[in-house]
Image (cartoon, rainbow, N blue to C red; front, side, top):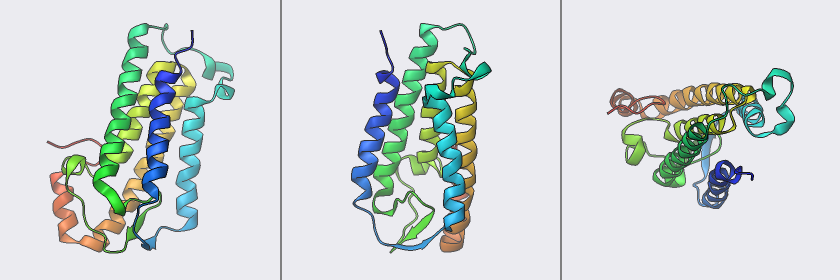
Length: 187
């Protein structure tokens, strides 16, 4: 019996919500360059391809990292759902200021509620955790490589966002930076 839907399901929920919520954003007033956007997007696509595509089962990449265990699969499913939950929670709090690109929106405000009270990039953190969950559940070497590439892409993107937010919000962003974690929460 295939249990893929337990890992694919949360990602489908995520994509459906993201598409619907993207229709309710503010007008963009400043954005990252085309090259910057698609360089990071390339990393994300490669990372998720490694994680989800059986076509990437080549050579050592198809081998299990550890002997298959139900507990590892269950932990992976739980991490995936928690990660997607964090990303959606963050997206709800970001509201009309969200964009798939590094941007500033019309009337942009610095968000410090919900998960943004604890970390500056909870959407990326949630997606990273979900990718790690997928890697645990699928348990192939390609799935170890995939989240690593995804995390690198999100770190690059998060640093670009921080640069733009620091320029826009100055001391307010610096205070937010000191109170919160980068990709891991600060309590």
